[in-house]
Structure formats: structure tokens, C-alpha cells
Length: 372
Image (tube, rainbow, N blue to C red; front, side, top):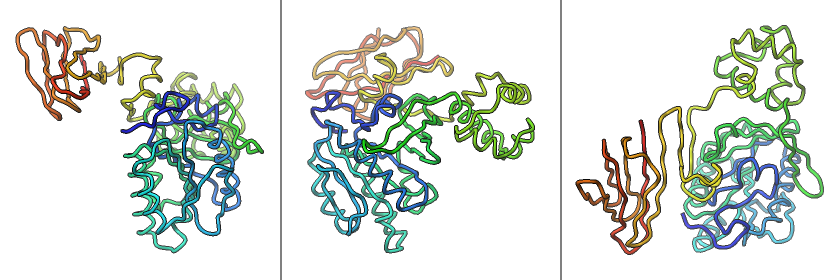
């Protein structure tokens, strides 16, 4: 993916402009689609979107800031934002951005549905979402949580639900698995959207909701288990009110799990890591894209300069798999020197790999995996 030059992190990381979210999610990937799932109220959506726009206006790594909406404009954007109309104007927008860098879009999804043509709206949003991902354009999409017609919620790499004064991180591809489900209180003011740190009540709410969904229970079922109201469970899941310590201990006992497990919930079914600077920085600078002791799996992304050599610090007594993403690479083994082209994969069962040599004049990229 082409990354824009400059910016607050050398161009490798975009930002929300909201400190708590930037700290929790380690900023944004260039090309990331962020879906904000909001309450179904036009005036409330406008206030929330305008709060986010004020935060985006403070991010110095963006060289262009663009709002996609309808005429007349429904949102009031700060100075420095351009305007493009939804519909036919999108063709001009895509053409304009093909050679641009450091761009952020804020899209009013309701602008796409104004003609009641769901198919056309779905096609237009999918085209724009795919274009943004391929060309490194950060895109914030705003719509009601219940509106599924656009399909952007399934396309987005980051989904944030805003309800009852709390943000819930529904999806955050490329981050630690513990990020998903996090609940953070927020407020809107003249400075824009302000997000506070997660609380103990939010942690409990995330764990309750996760475990309840895993077991296929309703809130009423969980409430009956510990003798509280379904409303109390609902408020606890939203992080609005914590259950008493006695209730938490009783629930932990009846579910047959520790309080720590109750707070954390079960791990998700997948974890996505991205092979760029943000994916490396989130693990504290370790050179591993994936490092799972539970799965016995470790993977590095090795970038080899032209005519150069490189290797990760893997053990030589474990099986290794190499996949060449870009370039022409020679793998140095104790008794062989196989050459891999782009798309080739090599499995080494024993004896290990000494290094990889880039035989080309451009940078080579190798996904290098070690497993038990």
C-alpha cells in the first residue's frame, strides 16, 4: 500500500485526533475504513459527525480533508474541509484522489440512500471503500447502527458503535484481540468528541456481553441466574452501572469461571495483523507480525533491500514456511539454494534457514513463519 510522506509518525500512521482512541487503537492504518454506528436520529448523527470532524481538523498528517454529503450540506465542517456531493460527484472524487496522499474522507452514508435505490447505494459505497483501502485514503463512514443497506459495516476494518454516552469497539482489525469489545465513555463539546478511559464497569459490561453471546443467552436469562432485573444486566453491558461485587462473585461462581475470565470474556475467533509500521509498534517493537505461544506460531515480515540478505531470529530446529510476496529470492539452506518467485512458498522441515537473498533490483518482501 502506498503511504503518504510526512505526518506525525513519519507517514506510517494516521490518527483519529482523539487521544484516547489513538492510544487504544494505535492510530489508524492508511486506507482504513472506519464505520461509526450511531443512534437513528439525523440531528444527533450530525452533532456526532461534526464532533469527529473537529478532531480530524487537528491531525497534521492529513494533507486533504473531504466531506462527502448532499446538497444542501447537512453537516457543518470546520475550515480546511473540501466538499464533494454524493452520487455522480464520486466519479470526480475518485479521479481526483488517484494520485493524492494523506487524504481523509468523512462520508454521510444517508446521502447515498436518498433516492431509495439500495443497490446503487451499495455499489457506490463498495467502490469508494475499496478504492480508499487500495490507495491509502482514511475514510470515516457515518450511519445509523440499524441500517445495513449500504454494506459498509461489513466492509470496514474498524467499527465503533456510539450509544448512550459510550463508544463500543465492535471491530478493530490489526490490533490486539483485547481491544475488541472495549467500552469508553464520550461527550461532545466545542472541542469536538472527547473520549475518556475505559472503567471497571465498562470492562465488566464487555465481558458479560461476550460470554452471554457465546452461550446464546438473553439478558433476561442471565439476570434470572443471579436474581437481578434484565434492565440491570442491560445497563451493566452498556457500562452505565456496575453490578455489585456480591453479584459479580455470585455470577462468577454460577458460570464456573474466575472473575478475571468474566471481565475479559473469551478470545475472539480471529486476530488480524497488518504488515506495516502500526502492526510492529503495537507489540512494543518486536519483529513479529504474529507471535502466538498458544498456537505455537510465529511470523515475521522480512523486507530485503535490493541485492541484500536478511533473516528473522527464528530457531533452526523448528519447521519454517516462507512465502514470497514481492521479488525474486534465494533461500540459503545448509545443503541447497532454492530460488522463489513472487507467490512461491517453501516449507523447510528441519535444519533451518540461514538467510534469504534478494536477487532483484527492487525491495523483496517475504512472509516467514515458524511453527511447532
